[in-house]
Length: 161
Image (tube, rainbow, N blue to C red; front, side, top):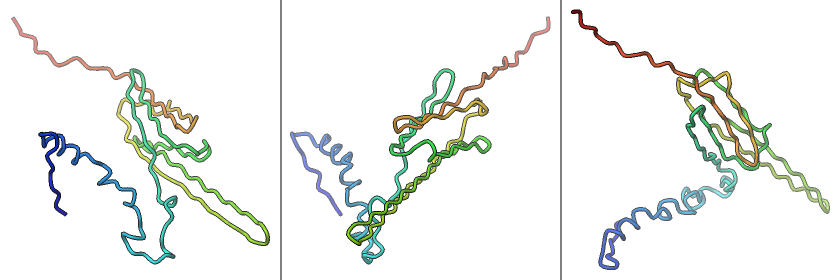
């Protein structure tokens, strides 16, 4: 689909940049509308809540440690599994909810499943035996202390007199 660059206010560059950075065009709310995009039969259409979400992560290097903060509201600490395999830290969570309601001879059942997995390769100077994790107010915080790395002095040639 071709688009026309419109010159606004006498300067085409801001308009071009605005059009280029217009995320609504690329990340439209109907992007995951499986009904229209794939023309699936109604029995195979997934509700929007069934499409998984990967939580946002902030990784911060501080003076004495690394901090990983993972946004996962609605979870509890028992839903998380944090594992270390060699130098790879895996953070996963699985939450399953079932609701049954019986009213006036009718039964309504709802099931909800949510899961994700994120993996991070830890730097060489990580103290893996001292990793600490805490979940509070929807944020999983993982602190990874740093090892002291001794820097060897560079090789120096000494002149013989």
